[in-house]
Structures are given as C-alpha cells and as structure tokens.
Length: 295
Image 1 (cartoon, rainbow, N blue to C red):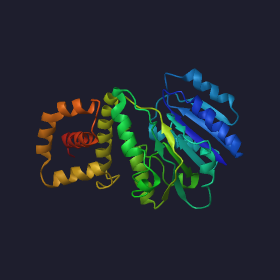
Image 2 (cartoon, rainbow, N blue to C red):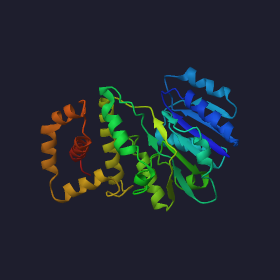
Image 3 (tube, rainbow, N blue to C red):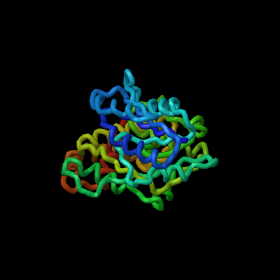
Image 4 (spheres, helix red, strand yellow):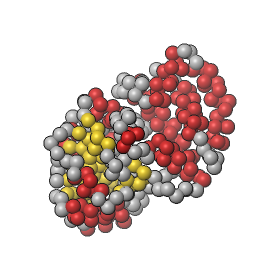
C-alpha cells in the first residue's frame, strides 16, 4: 500500500499526477495520491481536476507554511505505511517508476532515493547556470551517490516508511531558507537509518533563470550557516561550511571578504554568461558565506 505525496506551490501538477495515477493502476497496488498546495495564487483550476481521479486529492492551504511543514502535514494525512514523496516540478523518467519503488518495499528500515536527471537539451542562456549545476552536482548515478549516501540524498524523489518518519521528520523550526533536505539527511544519519540509492530517477523540470538561482543560492548559504550555528548539523557535513571553518581557523575571513567585494561584479558577470563556471560559483558562495555575521 502506497501513499504518493506531492507538495506544490504555483505549479501545474496535473500531468504528474495523471502519469503516477496510471502507473499505480498498472502496478495493481493499493494507493492514494495527496497533493497539498501551499497557498498558491496560480494553476488552481488546472490542479482541481486532480480530484476527478479515484483515491486522489488536491487541496489548498489557507496560508503558506513552508517546505518542511507541508511535507510533515502530507505524511500526517497519509493513510498508508509507505510514503513516496515527489516534488511538483518533477516527472518520472521510466514507465515502471512506481513498480521500481514497490519492489523495494520490505520489512527493513530504510529510505530509498531514486535520483534526479535533467533533460539533455541545453536551455536558453538565462537558465544555463541552474542546468549545469543540476547536471554536474545533482544528476549523479548510484555509484557516485553511494560514495556519500546521506549528503547525496535529495528530498524531491524518495520512499520512506511511516515508522521511520515518526522518528525523523522535517524540522519546522528552521527558517524557510532551503537546506531542509540537508538537515533531514543529517538526521537520518544520526538516527542510523540506511539510505539506499537506486536508479529510478525523475526529471527536474523547474529550472530557474540564473538570477533567481543565484538569489536562492544566497538564501541557501544563509540557511546552511543557520544550521551550523544552531548546532543542527556539524560544520564538516557540507563542504561549503567545512571550507569556511578552515578560513576562519587561519584568520583569513577578512581577506576573503575583501576579495569577494572587489571581484563580486566579475563573478556575477561570469556566472550569468554563456559558459558559467561551477568553480566560480563555489568561490562566490564561499565568499558570500564569509560576509555573513559571525555568531
């Protein structure tokens, strides 16, 4: 028995639900699909059509509660033991996507992550940074993901049991600044819950333009710093915070901040160009991290 749980916000999720619904029927599994909308302004009429499917529902929250809280609420609403979380802006790559996950269900306590892919067609220049980052850093095969199974885990496509979720939930106390998946994976590691990586990917369709991605990346840096400063994760869990600790240890922070302020316009020009460099992107985020106030 399977509960398919989809948080959405200002996104048309109908096509995803239709595909999952048909696959679940073909798999001959008892299932439900629950979509919760985090107080969107758009696509409400299109998404309402989801309620026409059997065992499927789409409802809109009265106020926005954030990425962590909405996932916890979805799990609370689920009727079945096995929870399949999918982000709204994804689409399964394979026709046997649901069957592949069902084959992993047994009595052992584990979390299954299927992976992510980006469509091979190169997007327009304004979206290149996000597309390149996704392909190089997120769209990893199982061999690469298993090198660091926890930090390679993303929450846009995973299967978890209610029994595990009762012990490791998404932390609702942190600011809504991203990295909730980082904290979730760290908590899974602390709980000694095994994360299994399989090849059952989804396409990530929601590629932001580079300007938006840079802004979200800055928010993510603030979110990461908050996790470290609050002792919710160790500083060595994520490379960015680990390198910051080295800079801080050797009293190089002021020098890095000085260099970042001078070269920031050049970094931005390069990252918004036709050939954005992930090395420059990493330097930019590390420099930005150093500019944040130390607690």
